[in-house]
Length: 135
Image 1 (cartoon, rainbow, N blue to C red):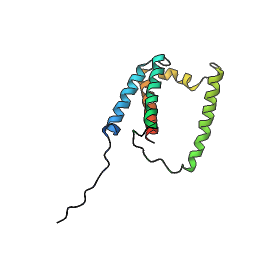
Image 2: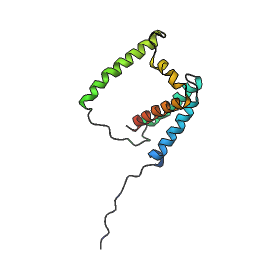
Image 3: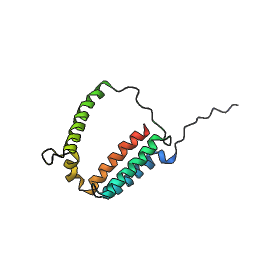
């Protein structure tokens, strides 16, 4: 009597599983949310976490998910609002027009004064960046 062939499943490392990565991202976002906006410590923390994610993304330390082969036809229409927003944000930042045409970050400042909202924004940023690292 022959034994049935064994099935093999690619085992992922523990730190790559969502049950591990999500709490790590939550902890990092809670720390980032406690830092005052635009302070030296917040800027250094942003550069540190962003740099670590870039380092993970450029190396072969994290398994990649397959990228979509082709963008859908509707994806092109997202370029126009993103480009308009980018140009508007860049011009208002460079010209420092003031309160007439505030940048998005100045408009978001009243919302981001609350530490919980700032932590949620940190989590969204880290989760999006982690998604890019996995691509």
